[in-house]
Image (cartoon, rainbow, N blue to C red; front, side):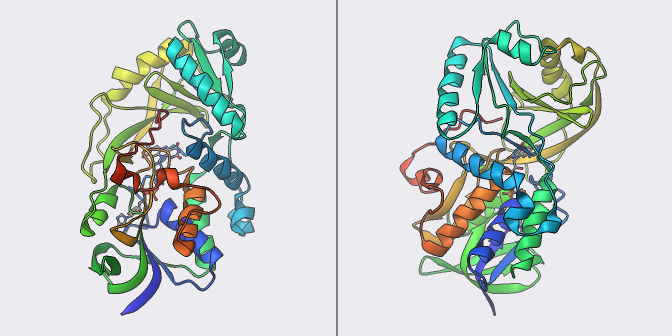
Length: 390
Ligand SMILES: Cc1cc2nc3c(=O)[nH]c(=O)nc-3n(C[C@H](O)[C@H](O)[C@H](O)COP(=O)(O)OP(=O)(O)OC[C@H]3O[C@@H](n4cnc5c(N)ncnc54)[C@H](O)[C@@H]3O)c2cc1C
């Protein structure tokens, strides 16, 4: 039987980041990345809106993004692959709008915490928003928080491919196959079954299976509160509202950002809930029913709009507290989780891959203390609620 130090189930951005960091920290480590669909047609990584922000409500998520922005900005250098090129980071910032006094107070509190961690988030009143973005209507805005730099969007597939290229160059093995089961002995994973290649032995198994993470956890007798949730993303053309300099706007229930002369926008369905892992049918009605009226309320230029295209992606939604579930559980100490990112995993992949690799190699969190996001919080019912889930 073939034997690996670490087998990673899932080879999209999380699995590839982990493979990169493991092989960089310990050259010669035998790492196998198993990916069932290397076209990534249904992977959240490929279907992401690919944005990064400092504006999170928990210090750990801000710290993760502080590391992420530097890594993304200097990507080729950080992975040691000059040919990886740039990830085309566009730093237009994020603008969170609040329509209530209570919401404004929360924005102020969060901005102070974010600034303490090195972010540049400033809080604006309606007039301040109007001065920066005269094309917006602000009649109902009480306050907004804005990050003038370190926030924006970038090339998601460039990030994935760079991690893969660098991990391969450092000796990680990538195979097209599917993890279909695992064997436990004395409370540890000793081997996994691959649909094509049969059984392989492993020292550690990492779960980077995205929306399929719960299924893998169940094979080890663990109930992981992660389920697929559908998000329909619309690309729209609004000839009377062309603002390529616009930030990523987070408004009442929807978000909006410019993309190559068009806009990208999406919302959370009112009846949000789990979907089948293979369900990629778009919820087309969401644009006319929910998003368009809000866009027109925010800027008169959205009077004429054409949906140019749309796509569906699935969040690996953590129903417990909408934050990453990381590391091992005492019941199976060599099964590592990197799951439940709930729509903000792409930007977190550099820091999460590094953190998990350090934990696997040393038995604890090192460069960044990610203990807040440890999966063990499921055992003591400690929620790390992220109020800024979009
Ligand atoms: C519409 C949308 C917008 C988003 N916008 C943002 C954003 O702006 N910013 C941000 O940071 N994040 C965003 N995200 C979230 C982000 O894309 C994800 O959190 C991140 O890509 C998760 O990466 P992953 O590798 O964990 O999962 P995935 O990309 O889903 O990959 C999981 C992989 O595992 C493979 N796999 C599953 N089971 C097995 C198995 N048994 N054997 C072998 N392989 C298996 C799958 O084929 C898949 O390739 C968005 C997500 C969506 C859907």
